Image (cartoon, rainbow, N blue to C red; front, side, top):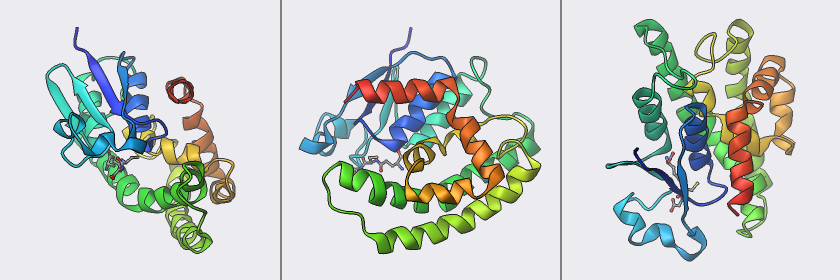
Length: 217
Ligand SMILES: N[C@@H](CCC(=O)N[C@@H](CS)C(=O)NCC(=O)O)C(=O)O
């Protein structure tokens, strides 16, 4: 049996994305801790897994990958016949799914990642205090993105269609980090976005990630 490994540090949003996907596919894996505080990600042997020195890196037998969204696409394709179906095979449905994967990556993530960093991770990791000018700028950007999501989710249970797919899954880490912060008002004030966020964060595969992250500290 192939040995799957996720090399990452605790609290890494992209690593959480990969682990959520593995759990949805009911695939066992080993979490290999990379201590970013001492710069393990910027030296060998980690650089042989990702020459850009960023976590996560992923191994599945003799295959090594990095970039969380490429990893989830590989997992969802390679293990298409087990666990949750996370992709569509119909070409038109798949095209819509690809659009929403791009939207997450290019519209949602830039603002949500900055908010997660400023409000949660920066103070938590002792890297400084929250810059509220950055928070306000990115809350405004995220509000515009979530207006589009609200219209979409009024017509469609999930972003790409009637079922949960990778397009929804990719949002989980930042939604989780922003829950309960001042930026959560952006989600709460949009009823369809709020219901969708509650639905996808309640998935057992996601709860399993949160439990694992607590024990990997
Ligand atoms: N696009 C990458 C982003 C990976 C990333 O930014 N990882 C952060 C940790 S959450 C990192 O390794 N930062 C260290 C650095 O960029 O030097 C992915 O989705 O995997």
